[in-house]
Image (tube, rainbow over all chains, first blue to last red):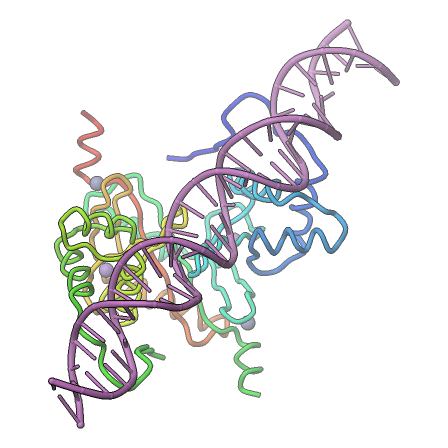
Amino acid sequence: MSVTEQPEGGARRQSRQRSAVLTLLDELDGFRSAQDLHALLRERGDSVGLATVYRALQALVDDGQLDVLRSPDGEAAYRRCSPSHHHHLVCRSCGRTVEVADPPVERWAARVAAEHGFVDVQHDVEVFGTCAVCAATRQG
Amino acid sequence: MSVTEQPEGGARRQSRQRSAVLTLLDELDGFRSAQDLHALLRERGDSVGLATVYRALQALVDDGQLDVLRSPDGEAAYRRCSPSHHHHLVCRSCGRTVEVADPPVERWAARVAAEHGFVDVQHDVEVFGTCAVCAATRQG
DNA sequence: TCGTATGTGAGAATGATTCCCATGAGCACG
DNA sequence: CGTGCTCATGGGAATCATTCTCACATACGA
Ligand SMILES: [Mn+2]
Ligand SMILES: [Mn+2]
Ligand SMILES: [Zn+2]
Ligand SMILES: [Zn+2]
């Protein structure tokens, strides 16, 4: 039922690059693409190769330290988030993100799956909208 | 709140290619990628250019006649589906798909959005699992 | 039937992600 | 502290889905 990735054996080796990626993610609010993160790191001076940014992000996702979200245009976006299962409320305009953890939707997903004989179930839930700040701004 | 796309003016022009795409989708069960559909059309003889397949799919999505789903590897998958709002229960193994429409999850999404001051809300919900048939097969 | 706005197709262009591989650097051990 | 082995890095090439270009075809209203 649960997968911990990281094949087996030894721990992951420490590196300036991985720290830089995780540190940056800690300071940011919304979801950011790998390309964005790479550019931000370059600006700030903690330059990291693009391929390495992708590897670091994948590793962090496998470790359950990041959430991935696929934007409608196909780009993957990453965000540091709490380790327990939850979902997101994302502002389409500014990317502001609120983590939402509510039992109802969990029970709902489990129930519909069971009703149709599905097992080994996971669910993917995201709510998109315009946050209060952006709504007010646009209203201007 | 609702968007009908199709800019304005005249109706969409009829064409053999668009009919072929829609007809094929009508005969298929699960979600299929544009590349898959293009290959299937070519096999069956109703050959259609790849770019045209993409254009037809996009048009059908805009018309609300298809649902799009983005697989974890980034490929978009399309499926003919009922016009009213609903969600999907998809088998990871065989692609079999069940449409699910339940008020609870709709209310849930609306409520969490409202609680955080978000407006103009949409939600994206998919449940993945192994269907009964595939589970039995794997069991051997 | 004509004229014209639209649709089509082949191939080029784009852009994100992954691969390759020579080089660099953790870290366990002495 | 060195040394060595293994894993990590980076940059450029390769992949691959999707979009763009543009010359040509065609639906369809008049
Ligand atoms: Mn999160
Ligand atoms: Mn559907
Ligand atoms: Zn916002
Ligand atoms: Zn199945």
